[in-house]
Image (cartoon, rainbow, N blue to C red; front, side):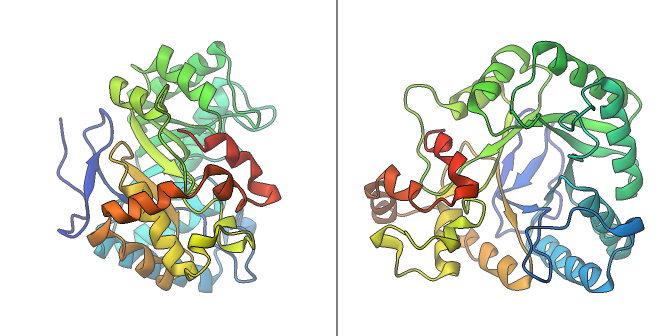
Length: 322
């Protein structure tokens, strides 16, 4: 049964997240944001004390995101849970929350047991200052694959927490297509959403598409890495057709390309400040590519897009076909 749209804005497209009944905004707020020195993202805050400047930054971005119609927030670190818990309490505003703690969850070393998942959930509730988490989006181990026994342990732990009213839906995040295919082919009834990369320039695999499987199984598809893990802006090897684009224009093109893929329910964007949020929201009125833009992007070879990856993001080559 569908629920009323949270934070509805007439300018924002909303898409049904699989079989959850939730209509999520086409753009979601990724939990990562850069540190003041330009570092990758906040991991932890000492004794969970949030620096005042960071709290002010997140409050401003979160409030503007809500006003813009964004209603899905995705977090994976202890710091993100702490700061957004304070933000939502201070502002009296909310979003659907997709939550994981990479340090406490099943993917962490020595934590591959059901008790770890239950502890992860309890700590999330405490840090987020909520009674129930919308989507537990469990992170797979670093190798990216879980055994059937491990998948079933996670499902069992989730169902225990769900019966206690602590969580609503279950998702899995993975960087490996083969794992997600296996998960959906064997456990789709228990899984509500999957999160996986959709880097700029990715194409639909016409022979065996992950999107075809999410559609068939009614499992939500939330996509990450639209900017190649930010290496899209760092690369000096951009294909000639995009060399003239400013970083903001390149970001908008990447987002519109993702949003123009109807099988994607929500694409996650890390927004470090109001300017980045404003730039992302500008994509919404013109989220669909026109035929000329689509033809232009498709004319750029996959190898040319791969040239834009850095050493740290080279693994995204595995996602040139989705």
